[in-house]
Length: 373
Image (cartoon, rainbow, N blue to C red; front, top):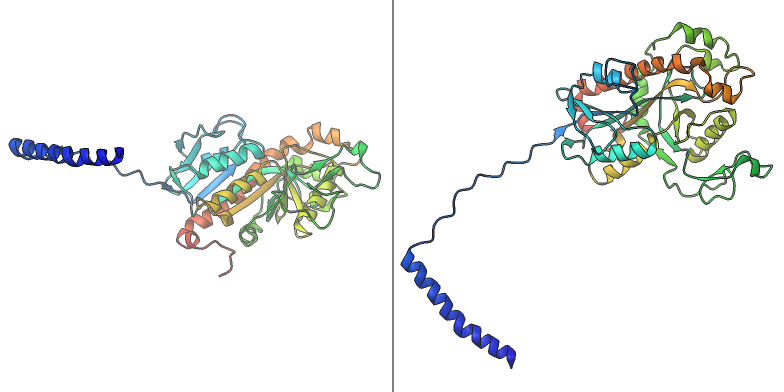
């Protein structure tokens, strides 16, 4: 009954209200036209990025002092336009004419993951066709290469995600106290599901980059050349620096020593089912790959355009007869002299690939080199 009364009320008095409104409008003339408004400016078009150079650390200033991984790129690639990037470790720098953007993620997988994700979601940049070049130093297995050498990776294996038992408490028949999540022992087969322990990046692209750079003569330094002669048990460590294919173990812990070096070799073989070969020990690359994998899934980046180049600043184990792991890790040796060689190799080798991409952008924007036609 109350509902019927309400309807009757609005039927009766609503008609009266409309009539009064029509009368007022007729008496006063037409309603005023709305004032003209300034059109809302179109959003600034995102900047197309062709190559992102991913470095992990800088020592002091970005130019003019002792160089870290970023400085050569900033100075030589003309990265002179600065973009504030407070949501990450370090501001971004770009050459807006060439389309090369340089970043410093900070050290470790946590910072690299956050930095890459922050950049991938930044509305100022169009990264849908960008190539991502990780260009950083690392410890190398002396069985594979020498100081200053450069390795292109196809497999990135995480050295943190897993179970660990102190080596002093493991069974006598265990080769290591490190085992995969949900495994009952080291290197148990079949492998448990991959939950981020291994990232297979574009092998065709890695081989293409290697083909472009394998014959480059890398710079050498007299102190390192003299030191190499003592590495009699490691023929590859005795060679002048060279370019090779080789895979990466990424771990937040800076590990060192013969036993851990053997673990890294077996860990890569385990997760890649004998397809990969451990060469370099970094700290960030699985984090970078994880972020790009998610960004690809969301349509912001192309995971197949990731390249990882690591260069040898030091070895991942002692190479001198009688030297302990502690002496090797904490001594001067090749570590300080090798840093500059490794940084120079990273720029020379990496820039060769960057230049090829830029010079043939019309081709490489549409098609990733090394991919099947």
